[in-house]
Image (cartoon, one colour):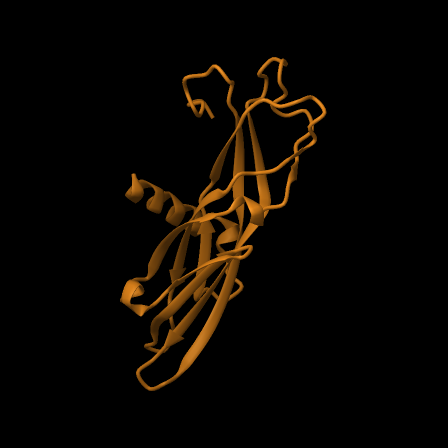
Length: 174
């Protein structure tokens, strides 16, 4: 499953115009869709406080002039992860997975979605840009040269309306 997700991210990066990096192609970051289950709520609910988000990012990099990836830092809101050379090794890509706590996410406006007592209707809603991931890559060489490169990507979040009496968590039909 991890290989399939990795290949789909790589394919999206190669064939998508959003794969163009602000760092001159040295660092490119892609985000997988974060999934959030929502229980039906009151009709007056217009804003929804999200629970924490489980985020997976794929960073691909190509340090120049014989330099190697010395460190990679990824962040969303106040959550960040640091990966040093011992984890990066000689790799050209790295997958980072982490959780962004609920208290670091702003409420989202979802009027009319997943209302208690209404027919299910649309059971899913894509929120394409409520969180942004930033990444910085430090490339370094044995001669002491170093460079830093940055990229960012919107993290797509999909809300699923899950009925109270449902034995299934997420609907299989997207």
